[in-house]
Amino acid sequence: MSTKMLCASARTRFIPSFSLSPHKPIFRRPTSLTYPRNYQTPIIMSAQDQIVEHVVLFKVKPDVDSTKVAAMFAGLHGLTSLNLTLHLSAGQLLRSRSSSLTFTHMLHSRYSSKDHLQEYAAHPEHVRVVTENIKPIIDDIMAVDWISTGASVSPKPGSAMRVTFLKLKEDLGENEKSRVLEVIGGIKDEFPAIEQLSVGENFSHDRAKGYTIASVAVLAGPADLEALDSNAELVKLQKEKVKDSIESVLVVDYVIPPPQAANL
Image (cartoon, rainbow, N blue to C red):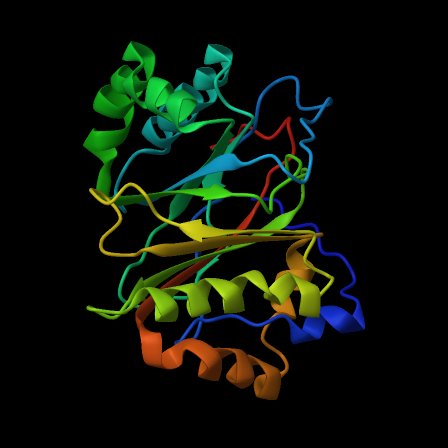
C-alpha cells in the first residue's frame, strides 16, 4: 500500500492510542481497494446527520495466491454499483497494534441508515462475493457496526485511519459505559490534528467478538500515525481515564489508497 509520508505537525505528537502492546507492522505486499468511482464528488453531511459505520477486519491465509486476494477486493469494489454506500474503501492494513487478534486487511464503508446497511448485507451480489471470494481465503473475520454523528465527509485518498475497538468488562453499568464513550469522543477536541472522529456503540454482535465500543480517527496521512504515541505522559493519562472499564483493546492502522490503486 502506498504510504506517502507527510511531515507531521508538532500537535500530532499528542494524539493517544489505547493500544496496550507494541505495534506489529504488516509486511505482506500491500493490497488495496478504492471507493466509489464518483469519489471526486465526496458526500458531505451536516453536523446533525447520523451515519452508519461498517468495519470488517479480515485475516487472509498466509499461503493464498495474490490473484484470489485481488478477486476478493475486486468483488467488494463492485458493490459500490449498488448505490447503497456513502463511502467504501478496503485494503491491507498498515499495521496491527494488537497481539491477540492479528488481522491483515480491512473494509470500511458508510451508510445513511441501518436499512441501507441491511440491504447491502442481504443483496445477492454481496452474498455471492462473501461466499465465493472471501470465505475460502480467510482464517478469521470480525465486523463492527455503529451509528456516528462525528463523520461528516468521505475520507480523502491518502488519509490515515486509526481504528479502535474496546471490549468492556462484564456487568459494566450504563454510567461507566457512557463515561468511556465520553472520553473517546472528547479526544478530537484535545487533538485537532484528528480531522474526523467517529465513535459509537456496536449494534451488530454476531461477529464482533465481544467488542462493544468502536472509533475511527481520520488524520491527514501516515506520518501522523507514526507520531500518535510519542507523548507517553498524555497517552498514559487517556488510558488511566478508562482502564478500569476495559477488558481488552484492538487497534489497527490503515491508509486509504488512491482511487487508481487496484494492485492487489
